[in-house]
Amino acid sequence: MYADLLAEVVDFHGDLVRNIKGIRDSQNLFDDLSQDPEDLAVAVVAESAERVPSDAPLITRPFDYGAVINYPFVNFNGQGTRFSDGLAYGVWYGSLELETTVYETAHHWHEFVADSFSREDREIVGERRILRVRCDAILIDLRGKERREKRLLDRHDYRYTQQLGRYLKEQNQNGLLVRSARCRGTNADLFAARVLSRVRDLCFLTYRMNPTQDLVRVERTPGRKWLEIRPSSLR
Image 1: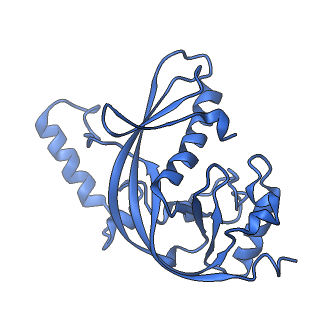
Image 2 (image 1 turned 90 degrees about the vertical axis):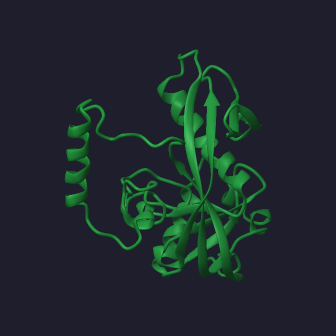
């Protein structure tokens, strides 16, 4: 069924870029419980005493940097994505280029905000944490295959790509490389956490938008425009 489409693989050893929700400045998780420094100190000690030990907290702990690797594989709740229907398995999405992650996440963030607060005529701010993650795996190489199979880049109907993703998962494939549906960059869509390692911070980004306007402003340095994206061009 997919013989021609899946005929090429790549022995990939390199970094992928992961773009997740994050905050630039650390927050005190207990300051809404008390303003007394002694109370806050007790809360920190209590949380530390009950915390499950981890040799790699950046990777495994759900409140450390959004569980950079494990979260997508354990938190699928019926919300479909490009290569998963969100019911039986999760997919880890990264990109070869930082800018590609921005186009992808800006699209989904704008859609969510516009659906929830379409009449809010004011600036809404989102912060993102960008990380490099090492990948060592044999990956299915779909780059260029979109010229023959247009459904690989369908921006609205994921039925074909979800079916393909389910097939690859059942075949115990590690993942794939494919052109982004939102820009000309390359995405890596992975089905196995074991091929990922060495999480490292790259940078923070700030996204700014007004739901009534067709514009997302992206800042790498606070207060300084780095990219501007028109969401209508990504739909």
